[in-house]
Length: 518
Ligand code: ME8
Image (cartoon, rainbow, N blue to C red; front, side, top):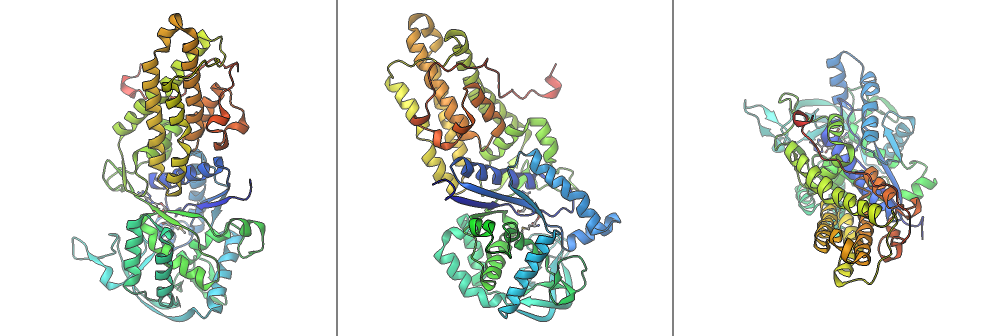
């Protein structure tokens, strides 16, 4: 029943200590594809993204720039909002952690942990990486080129000694192991699950969850000398977004527990160890799944300001166009693995997959309809085996696409759709409708009908990846708004012969190198 199927999906919330980079864009756009896919499949989707404005990193960056952390957040958070808009993200809300609703939710979760007896006052002595906003044990550290101590992620660590509240994370080791074992889907992909299981098996220490020397953060209830450790407050955003602590409210009852947290591989421990432990302690149901995507590199190189190779997503969208940009990352990078961007690879995808394969197929077949069929969807005659096989291939795409997307295999779904695009090109070339024009116009009409029908279904199926271009394709075959969902896929939604079509226009331009352009 519509409305019965809900799907709550989130991205990590980004630190607005600088401008958004391609990693942020990748996470937002891939999550958007997953959200749109579920929406088109009849789910009531809630998609949350936002910024993580607290933490020491914000304080240190602000100091360097001679402004306050609040000014830094005020300046940068809008860039992340603009990025979501520039990416065409369909997020239902954008949360920032300084909001009143979020302070309230964070303080409530703290109170619950304390009421459980899981919070105690102690002294933290150990290593801290500001870049990672993470505590590390001595044994986890590695050595840098000059003998300096580094976090396992390669970031700088500082020795810290201060009074701090602790969360009894050690008490949750067995429960967490039980969770990973009984619900293998909770941490994905599998390699990440193994990584987390061996980390937890190695033993958990209690976690320092407050900072006394920091004034920037959510105040600890009942102790104004402390602010919460940034990750307690950050993780809580996922329940703030659906109305916590009002757990009787519609948003919470409808969408919590979240179906899917999409995050990058570097923040797995926070989401699959700390977060479920906090929720267990607070008696809040656990999210169903945490999926870690890989990191993006620039031609295989890590991006850094010093190398000058940080990719600006806004510039890339301007240069390649939004939908090709979205398509490239969905198709090129196996979701869950690291990926690389290179200009040649991007241009190749744009010109081969989009302009040639899908764009030309649509343009050629629809132009033939305009010229030879009075601009109307032709009436198909008897179907040949080739026609039936072609239609069966496109009709059969939804089931495997659903299965792939339930595993977040965005690249598999995109690849499968484009396999059918390639098949449709072979079909079109093999049938030679242009030659049939004189010899067998009825047969030409059938081939054009089948091709236009393939375009209809491909456009619906690829809408989550390229919403704007696919909507334009659907305009060209005159599909009403209500029939642009997965329910209209397959035989039930076939094009109606006789429908008048508009003059076809190219939807996927070729990418032409600037220096070669006239
Ligand atoms: O970690 N490629 O924020 P963040 C792909 N505030 N993804 C990347 C990436 C890259 N090169 N670099 C970063 C934080 N990411 C916390 C999250 S959630 C309660 C709090 C991903 O701005 C990264 O893995 O450092 C994370 O999922 C997201 O971008 C935000 O990173």
